[in-house]
View 1 (cartoon, rainbow, N blue to C red):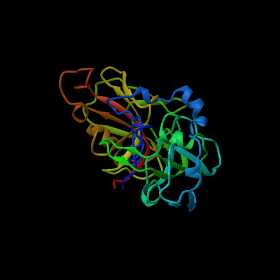
View 2 (cartoon, one colour):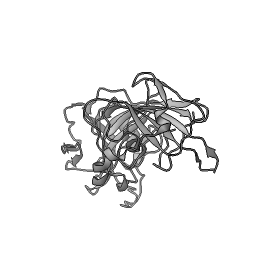
View 3 (spheres, one colour):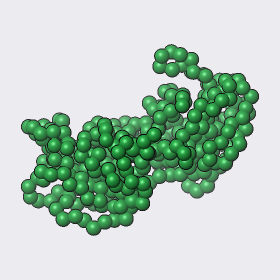
Length: 320
């Protein structure tokens, strides 16, 4: 499947799951936070309609993979988007996580280029803002909205020409930004957690010696799929050093973080989510052996420190 990278609109490409601005446990990205201006301008962010998108006929229902019919080659001179089916409920707001699906077609030939987000090819939610592609294509739409977008020809990173494209994009739903599972009984000896109204945790460490073994507990048990090795998961997290009692990193205030279970993060972070269900919140204690390694304690790289992570599991995409 080849779907155009939208480099002019986002650092992410629609050929992969769009997760522009994600933080990581070691590298928080404060710039990912939607600004107040972005929130105010989301309704105005949607690009205008035009002759190209208005000439496209769609066959199929919102939420189901559909076909786009138009006279090819379709001349597209600028980015266009038009609503062809309006949803219901509350409009999305900047910073919301949305689930969505799309199908792409070549403007030159009319052939289907690929799709994702439907039942046979689930995709992770994306945070929407006026500054990313979904905000510019959907604006402040309501769940159940379908738009048709058209993209002019461009060039890829190698300088090769990429033909114009037509997208069907369905806004499926708004996804919670914090764990929604059923609260569980606290586990003796584990740190305790209090939550702000938006779900941001605050960790209190128990007195006594710093633990030397990995441990985890489920604070909220979700009702979603079980997380397995190879899944790509979307989480909110906060990391606290047991040695200093300070928060050293978190996704809260930036953007949820995605990673592949079994790679890309320290072993203890994978162990914390493995076998848990979507919608759950877990707390995990990571000694250096499953965190950033043994050695002389160094605040800069967390070597030698025992870490506590509170992790909210928001979504999981099975390995393809």
